[in-house]
Image 1 (cartoon, rainbow, N blue to C red):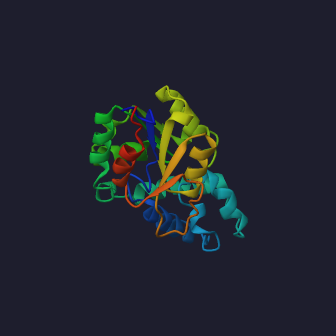
Image 2 (tube, rainbow, N blue to C red):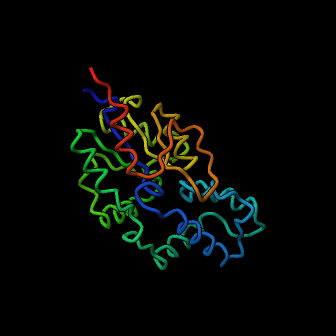
Image 3 (cartoon, one colour):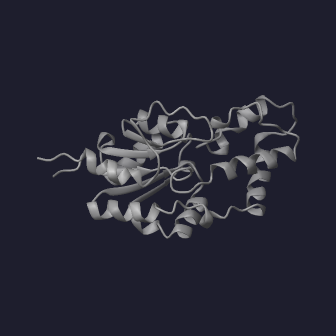
Length: 221
């Protein structure tokens, strides 16, 4: 029996940790303090995105004298003052899934749009860091998702061609990023944000479903 994929690359937010709704509400609350609204921007625009890619859109739809550098600095402090409890949001099956993949011999990567300190917080809270061979933050690139560079780079660091990698995603931006990098993409089914996931090769009801599906696609020789 051989495995169809050599590596599995995970997104973090919305896949390993159910954090996207908290992020959206925190951004909304912060912007309200500066009389900025995001209600006219579709929620899927925010899911899977880092703030660098959002400021232009936010400023376009608001009449304000605030600029991106000012808001970025203030938002970084706001996040410190309003931390997220990642421990309560880790998918309960995350560790079991990663253990399964390790036993099967897959190389495992993490490709997240989040900042490196947030990634480390999540991995520490879930005791997941030891399962990843490569951990990559979107802030390492000029453009994060939906640009494909983060997935191309993660595959390169794993020493695997993109076509031999499987990406586990949820957001429109993340799915596009992995798809354009040439990977197979399985998406955690969205039931809250109205995201378009048609570029994904398959949908998963839960993270743990990927273990069963992986066994189904293994090729017997």
